[in-house]
Length: 96
Image 1: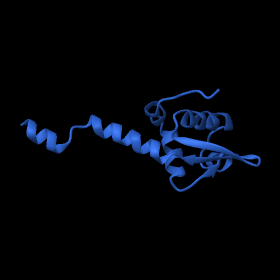
Image 2 (image 1 turned 60 degrees about the vertical axis):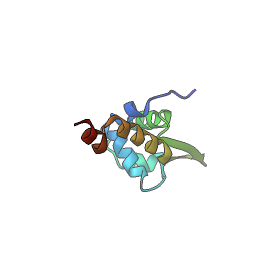
Image 3 (image 1 turned 90 degrees about the vertical axis):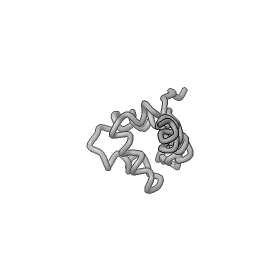
Image 4 (image 1 turned 120 degrees about the horizontal axis):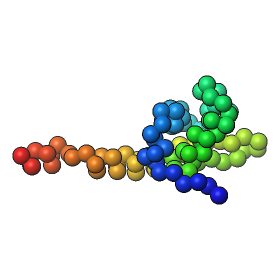
């Protein structure tokens, strides 16, 4: 069973944000991702599991490798939610 995480809590960690930046360049295997960080395999697996649980990445098995891909549509939805929280200039100008 996959554990569910919110995208906002997943984005709260700098390592997970760095993983997402790396995946913006293209899909990577778990090993390729781990090679970019000075973390133990269990720690990296934990971060990838949280990103997957938040729907920010998807994972598929290719032979013996797990390949992670950025779910950009989910990130776009999160960005839209964040922008909705910030008053626009137009709304601020009309309020004065």
